Length: 84
Image: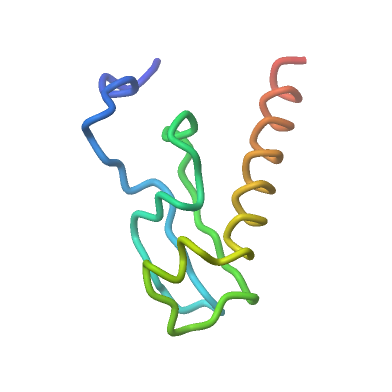
């Protein structure tokens, strides 16, 4: 069953938690996952990001773009595998 607020764009969910070297950085990281995958829940732990990263530098970091691309690719692969 789908959640009752699945298609409500105004509500922000705390779905993805960002860790760097096992240190908690951010609870709701919108830069990591696109809006259309807002139902995905998980943890991202990266060794490549600096520990003192701020929200502004997170938006401009190339490593975050690579992480985002890989998460989307992995999610779509898993959806395809589940559908078969």
